[in-house]
Length: 392
Ligand SMILES: Cc1ncc(COP(=O)(O)O)c(C=O)c1O
Image (spheres, protein in one colour):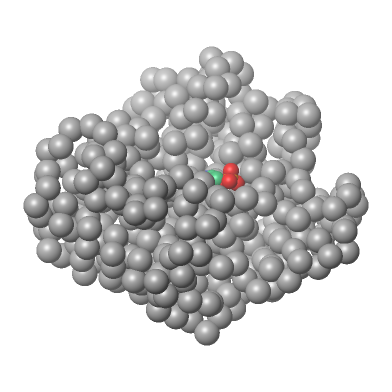
């Protein structure tokens, strides 16, 4: 099946070719199933990235990294983050690590003690739960609440819970996965104020920062004031934006020398290393990937519109379109199907989604749908899902 060409920058998506991929998204599904779960896009990576990877392999340049390669990437990352997101990043206070999740683990290890509470807003990206509990810290989760067709932070509840439970770290996900919220400056200022007053370190996972739809603007929490920056580690990566998660290369921007130095408490051996291909791809993405990203955002915007139109036939869903990310948080509570919702949907429709419960108990009755695919594949996904919702 050949699918529509979405942009001059991107070749057509061929579902038979997608099925040959060895990555988790496609390799984990049967030949009549369509994956819309893990956060990988189906689009081909930018030609500039393909070229640099091919050149690196052709040169046989796969030995140990030169110490300057990380430095160049740190500089690129700092400049780009400043230009795109308005955060002053000191390249000397950037660390390159293999994954954002690993960086979160490193921060928890370095800045909290076993038994401490780590606060985050739920539903949330599943590894937040496993990393916190895996390092013997306690989970302190506060649900985002639905209000006037958006999800908001209940600051009264949050303040009360913080005063009561005394967490030592705020682990923020902004833009938020799975709700797609892009937190406003006022929300970030209030959150940061609570963190500062209660002497919490802030770790801000901003991996979805470039995937923001028109009308919204990503603001790094560290950008709200110098005082906040000093207590914040900002985490990001080219992996979501440029569809290269398998190359494992993330960036940590420390807001002060003090934080940077205290991070030494986490032994390097626990952080692993970064590959030459990861560094080459991330550097090229940041330096040369802007046009490709614009084209991708056009496709994602169009897919988001398709999804919004589709949800109109199911008003009980009360769909709230994501402000960022290519992930849609879909409410199926009105079907009253109990748990293992995503499994049931896969069984009946062949569409593989992420079950809401894996994002915390607030996700019961929800599924997360990844819409970063070709138009025709998305339409097929929505048709099968629509039949299931209407007829079971
Ligand atoms: C919020 C969030 N953080 C981190 C990650 C994973 O990043 P990494 O592969 O660099 O660990 C994801 C992947 O979907 C994510 O959504």
